[in-house]
Length: 137
Image (tube, rainbow, N blue to C red):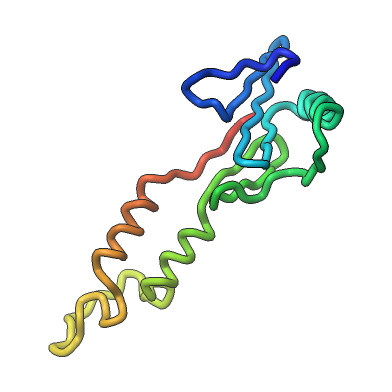
C-alpha cells in the first residue's frame, strides 16, 4: 500500500500512517477494511482507497469479529454484551436469582441437569479474560 502507510512483518493485515500529530490505522480481514483515526484523516484515506479500489463505505463499525463497538461523542466503547448474554442464556443463568443461597435438594444437580459443567466453566473463563475498553480518540 502506498501513500505513507507502514506495514510490519508482525501483523501483515494492519497498515499505519502517522500524519503530523494524528494517526490512521487500516485493518484488513479478507475483503473487509476497518479504518480508525480522526474524522478528517479517515475521510482522506477513504477517498484515497475509493480511487484505488472498488469499494463501498458501510459507515461506522458496530460489530467486528463478535465484538461490539459503540461510537460515543469522542470515544469508542468496545464490549461483549451480546456474548455475555448468550453465555448466560446458554447455561440458564439468565433466570438465576442473585445472592439467593439455599441448601441443594437431594435430587437436584448443583448446576441443574441441563448445564454441562466444563462447557460453562470454559465459556466463563473466556469471558473473564476479555475486558471492556474505551478508546479515546
